[in-house]
Length: 542
Image (cartoon, rainbow, N blue to C red; front, top):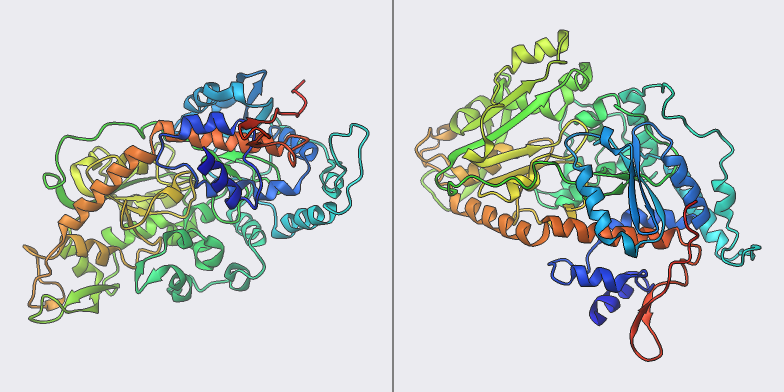
């Protein structure tokens, strides 16, 4: 306990842990992760620039948006509102059950929950800086209020709501993908490459966009690869930016708890899991599974338009593997002639690379996929492998959905197969995973997909790629080792209990943020040297 408290204070500039930290520590003491919750700190940092009263008003406003449910904690009891209408793939029932396990330790609070996979809170960078500037000014200009419990902040003035609250029952104007891209540009820092180079030549490869997170053509720094504001080409290479938003975006800074986010968004990430995340693995060992890279996706009419047909991360991948142009080329790392220890990069025809490697890539279509563009996709990439079990393969490629992270990542991490992961989304577990140890990272541009897969599978017993006399010996033992490490770590750090620990910690931090005495309450030693928890002072919900 003493170490946990000291570490917390060191990581938070001397600030004490929140009240009830001792109860949280009792739950977390058996976990592999005790001290590192950087995602929570990053998500909540901007809300320290608002006073507790302003935050509570913003919470109420957030619940009035279309597609937002809520969890109410009152007197230790949990009440859910409008959560059953959410996305079926996300387990909101589990979320409610988790809150009920520790709700007696929480103050009264209202938790607005985003019912859509996609993040939605996207205030401009200028708006976020306005709050930060006002907060800095307020720290030296506080005057007592009549209650004596709270100081008047400049952010209270900024937070006063003079507009009408949105009515979730009223029709709303659907935003276009082009409007989303503009909002996203405005949400990124002014010095970010996205601001400087928003208009891209999408027909050419942006080497400057990948260099900061790559070693050669391979993805090396995964966390940096999630900094999408530094990669302007991604605005035209992913369905999320190329599809019209399903639900209205929120351009004001409000607290909204979501399952994931991308760089630039201000949602607060919840430890929500897809409903199939805990499904058991097959019995076959790694070596008994097919020596093939498997990928299955689905397309919907909503996510298909002229821009998405050219640039979507799904259609680009289908084109690369299932229907490449005759002259398309890819860079491979191949052995020098008559050498097993020396290698060089060579340009190889994509058609030859696809022939010499074993891929099983397919696409499915739901009933709503109709019309000219859907028909064209079916004609070009009609192969359907939806009925196959991905767990029968050694290698499984996991890409983002149109509006969120891969659904099956946790499931594959628990298996004996190796996950190849390509994503732009941040989740509660992103910071817990290490690339090349727990999974194989793949850049969203796929420039190293063939070369990465070749490293593990080799060309032995297949054609000699690019006319080279030497076969490239694969390293399946390395792949099996990664699968084992991911499986073991998942059992230690990504279980349901770990989601509970994360959520408890998040809501304790949130409870302090909305408390009128947040700068003075905490968990600390008393004069007798014993740890004690201050009481929550926030007034109860009406």
